[in-house]
Image (cartoon, rainbow, N blue to C red; front, side, top):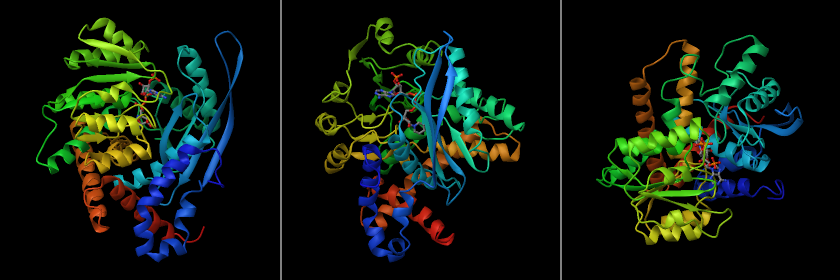
Length: 441
Ligand code: NDP
């Protein structure tokens, strides 16, 4: 904490990992000898830069831009870009640190990184977003490359932004390579990348339920967020016969007692992806739903106080605190699958695990997105493309492998059924062994 002052999210992510891997360090003295943990906690490189662009009124705007290149022991840096006013190095270091473990779990050779800007895309015109992306990637181009560092989307960065950034890179470098993932299908993108994080999350949950001879069929599900991950989690829950009843954005949530149907989901997609509207419009249109405003920061979020079987937080970090976790437990929640990165506070994690709730950490259950980015990279290297069915099959296989890997690693150290400890141990040992093999550098 003294080395990284004022970065509570990074401390939180580090604390969780340090706690879980203690037994591994005790059993394998080489990890302490080679100071693996200390090395992993220090980014290999942290790039910070100015992003200047002109708004529609002709005024000059200045934002901060970053790329955290955290660890390249097992492959090129890989991880998303976030555009949100809350972005600062502490958030990106937490995300990059988590990403290192997550990428290791996918079984695809990818290191970890994360980047972004404090730019707020909300309320900006199409042209302003394009000019910002062009300025941002003019600098990023100097630091990335398809064998060096391959960014993707995250909060505030979807297909539109990836397109503008890819166009900038191509113009400056005069080469068409897979420098970004999440590209459009038809210009280097992979089918199913857009769906992959949300779908993968629900595949992971299905594996967890299967272990208890249960399934998603008939499960009432709380989903937070209404962006990329939330939309596709809702879609897959519907495919699997579950009943999603909530969605949210930073203004509040909608609760639809009758369930979000495929038709209503199309409304959310159009609202959020095309019209860039607010979630209360759902309740204006569908009378079976009601909108509840939630002002941040709140002592607790009433959305997590609704009776349901499964909860999938898919919005942002720390959206479920200790009180929310108590409410979920009180309402008989059986499973919590993290779609977002670190949506549960440490207190919330302890509460749900102590109460026997099945819980999967984001670095395992939302890894389908980056895994499919890895699949996009493979297709870019090969120069040939796979069908949606083929990619989906691979995604399902990877999610099952991650699920099983977590359980095996947890069992090995006496934490039967603890996905969080298993994910941390499996990710850590893979990266740690590669670091030792590559010497003290
Ligand atoms: P989007 O920008 O598409 O959607 C984010 C959603 O979360 C929006 O509904 C947004 O509401 C809401 N949200 C964002 N910040 C806050 C906040 N501070 N308080 C309340 N609501 C908020 O992002 P994604 O769906 O891509 O990402 C969601 C989460 O999933 C993030 O944690 C991300 O790191 C993680 N993730 C994403 C992956 C991907 O492939 N996209 C891969 C793995 C993890 P509003 O519109 O009002 O801001």
